Image (cartoon, helix red, strand yellow):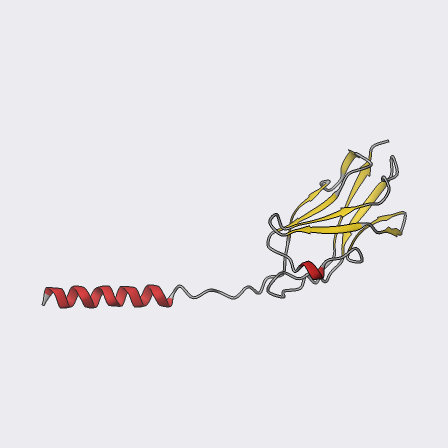
Length: 132
């Protein structure tokens, strides 16, 4: 009798724990974990790479230089973008050094998707100033 009760208890415990282990679907769009340079940074080197690190993996095909760019005095500037799958980092490499003493706004437009298809619906912007 004790073995039957013990076996029934073990089976019930297994079934309950197995039922609770279903994966919860990802419905959250990607968020920005950090940036380089940080927001409002000053004395940023003119040859710096602009980096956005996400909180999760991004669909590489959803990010490009149209979505990730710089703005100076209202004029957009585009560079070469790349994405590091292991680090969740998008990098913007400008073809020429940034203008000394200028304050740039880095922009990630809405539209970037994570690997499950959740779309970031808001733009993300931050500013930094290049060293004189």
